[in-house]
Length: 81
Image (cartoon, rainbow, N blue to C red):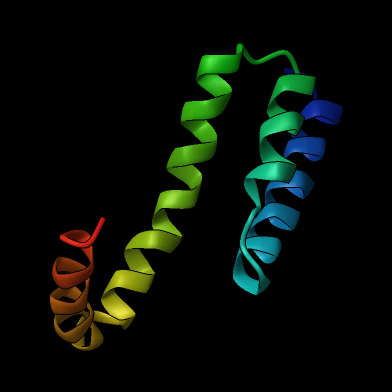
């Protein structure tokens, strides 16, 4: 990996993180960027997923107290089909 690719991935990752913070969907930025730099598709997918998982973990921590009522509702609605 050369310096240009590293800078490109840095700014793509930054833009992806900002997009995830605002509306979600930052994988639409970082996944193609990883593919463009020559990373195989499976590795790019795993890297993109791992990068996104920190935001998911943080949101679970932030909304931990609001989960029990929603969990009861999800059990109720999962039985309806």
